[in-house]
Image (cartoon, rainbow, N blue to C red):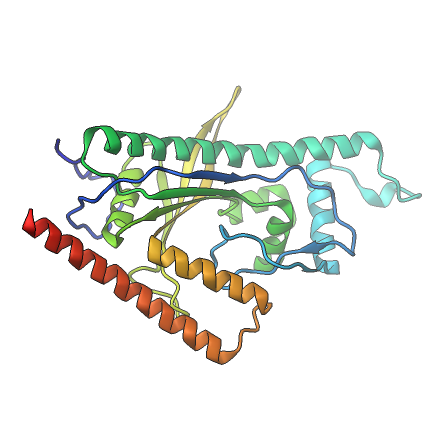
Length: 298
């Protein structure tokens, strides 16, 4: 059975021969319930130094007054309610219900975009399992940012605290990570997805070809996915991360270490992590060579 052909519409990624053993897709969806507006004593999570927001949340830090101001701005943007007009500090129940509805609507479009994208990935996976001799996709994970995480990024990036600005400037609220066995497969899956006519690529950050200074490697894409609602269609941004198993293992460990030390990691441990990143890169290269040798024997 011939492998899928390259389309002129696809984003240009490095190419290689690809024939490996298949594994099943693991869809793990982490979607948050509609949150309440926090008090000053509640908390939000710190920033992941690798910019890999798909990792699990770490320890919390105190909510700052600046973050509370962002909550208030989003609250007013979503409800058109001016809290200054309330003398006793009590918000009408209908306003709270309206806020809950607006937050749910805000999240739903991103959840639907994740659903659309994971369906595309599952179709590719099933096609390879049934009509080809292997699949380049090992595992798939998805993430929908919580409101706390969105607020933290609004504060960190200086985004105006209104819904339209958040939608326009924060483009990784929805996230999908695809783990592959080999580096070539990560680029190949990216190519297959981006050549689909209803997916538009907004941004590509290739940390595989150009690793971060701490050793982090992954291929990051920001794409838009059409979400067809009852009365209109929304083009929703989704971040796609593609990496190998070795890269994913390293990134997960690095993430946990930075959270454990609240980002103040001892220099000797940073050096060890950098060396581990080099080892992960060497392992990917060695496994690719072994695969090529096995193919040569066939």
